[in-house]
Each structure stands twice: as C-alpha cells, then as structure tokens.
Image: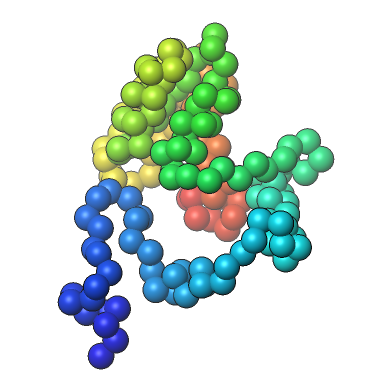
Length: 156
C-alpha cells in the first residue's frame, strides 16, 4: 500500500483553514530545483506572468509581478497597493479571508464597508453588495471572481 495514502504517513496532516496540505502530484512536480537566473526558469516565469496578464485582459496596459508568500501576504499587499489612503473599500465577507481583510484595513488605516454573506454558503453576491454601496467602483473579491469566470466558468 502506498504510504502517502495511509493515515500512518510521516507527512503531517494540517488541520488549519485553507488549502495547506500539498497533494502528492504537486510535490512530485516541485522536485526540480530552479535557479532564479537560469534561462529555463526565467522563460517559465515570463510565460506564467504573460498568461496571467492575458487572463485578466491586461495585455499592453498591465504587468504581473509575482509575490512570494502566503495568500494572506498577497491580500495584504493588494490592499496596501490598490486602495489609496483616501479611498474606501467594500469588503464582501463570506469567510475567514473577508474578516482578515477587515483587520488589515484597520491596521493600514484604510476606510472600508462590509457586506457579509453566509460562510461557505455558496457564491458570494458582490453585485448585490455593490448596489447597496453605490459609492464603490468595484468590491473586493469581484476581480478574482471575474478572472476565474474568464478561465472557464470556475467562478460561476
């Protein structure tokens, strides 16, 4: 029997929220060591960056800057970068990340409003929240939803 599929495996089982446990197939794909100045790595990184820009519809006007860190790190960087000091953010809360965004905005001194839905109760409805808070151009969470929808219906 494969040890990776048993409960006696030496790999720790992470019981925290979020997709933290790495699947065996992902681990296998990560067995190659890459050097940051290696030509193949630079080409792969460029390809990923270009594909993400295309997915977001930003060719010719935007670039992708990969951030190394956790999802929380990326969300904090996004909030601190895209929400100007005088701006106001609508945070659609349907779980832990939304509540975490509230704490981040408070720590950064960014003004925000919230729209809360049931935790893991299905798709959040940012368009409803947007109608309730017409001052906002785009609620947090909507950009990711739009990009996932363009990727083949994932966000629908």
